[in-house]
Length: 432
Image (tube, rainbow, N blue to C red; front, side):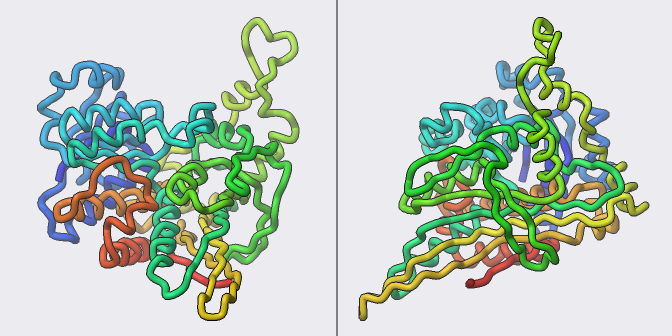
């Protein structure tokens, strides 16, 4: 199995590790990697506890990815005979890496899409879906928006909705609400995700579907109080716009309402910045000619993501006291019994949680954050078992994670969930 990875960072280093472990555990053929990076020295820093991953891989350093996109034949010795191309760099490279995968007759995966533009809102489709027929003709697949949320959340929702079709009574999904918890208690201000990405997400008007219509509200203008499983406190959640909303509505158009919320320490910080007007795109007084906005200044001075070695040090010296992630989807149901024309309403909650962050220092994943670890684990597991399933099943085209359960089947779905728990990512399932 050969995997080509564009961009090595906090998440992709976790993905590489989990793919390596799954390959050895499953007694598959030896796995190898090609790391396509712009700075070899920086890339190697992400493997400071995983030197063996450098030994089973080759580093292809180039000043610009465009060199490869425009001259793929020149890099044939690195890229040919690959099973999958992964874009873990900027979402703006998705289409170019997809075209490379098509050129070398390989599968594809990515972690995110740029959804903060008018085209996505108008078409309600991701740009990667424009290449669906191309991948279908090649009999290869493209998994998009992988991770823990989006990714595993969609997978679990898709599995549950698929199972509803096998019930002896009619079950209609009326509403889906996804609730995220991103909580960190630390002595210093530490971001678990790119602050610039977080600012972009928070500053963008939250969009959601209500009665099949796409609506938007001002950031932080509404909230709800929510209780996450196993988390001791109630959390104030705020609407947010992420890939799940477009993805789930695209896959399950009959669901009238789709909405997403997020809460936790980092979100409260962003709320304060937003309400102080510090995320504004307006020019600073006296600086209009130089195009300096308050937003750009905040992005420049706000603390950046820390290196893996620094996160490990913060964990060991108790600078980070606790960190926890959870993603819970509440599925609102209307169940109809044809025998007596009776209808009842129910809410099923499914999702994942990860709170064993401090235990990572004892593993090769030391230095990963409470966000990058579950994101990488979720993406790696979905990639690996889809690749295995493709050997026996025709899995092809551009695929959303919620469509995988029907394609993979019950046995593989159960294996995926068991793998998640083996990596201390716990599943939640309850009926309210």
